[in-house]
Amino acid sequence: MSLVHIVLVRPRDGAEPQARALLGELADLAARLGAREVHAGPNVSTEPFGGGFTAGAAFGFPDERARDAYLQDPRHLDLARELAAAAETALVADLPGRPAGPDDLGAT
Image 1 (cartoon, rainbow, N blue to C red):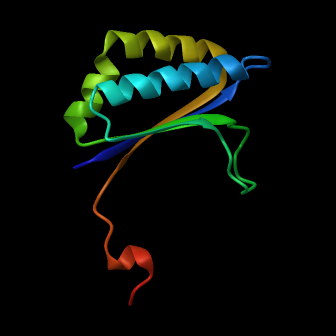
Image 2 (image 1 turned 90 degrees about the vertical axis):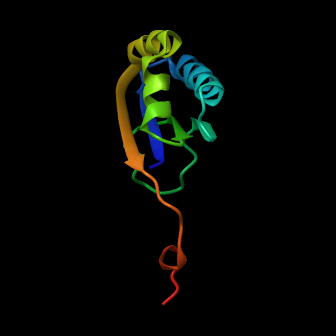
């Protein structure tokens, strides 16, 4: 089963550039370690539900094994510590993936 690993960050005052740079480094690492898709950058949502999370990343891994290899990589551990120090708040979630089907497109 594929997984999407999501990280949202509300940076400390003045730490937005550092948080975005660290998310970019995490994205590069995820891509090197098997993520099929990587997205990272500022929150550009036009919806009013951002909760102050101004930057984030999402990495699509083919399975739990690939995700776990990323999470356990020493470079990930270092970057995660740096990101935690730059963040007022961070939110991490892993969502299970599945192939999109007709039901996902509104077909009846």
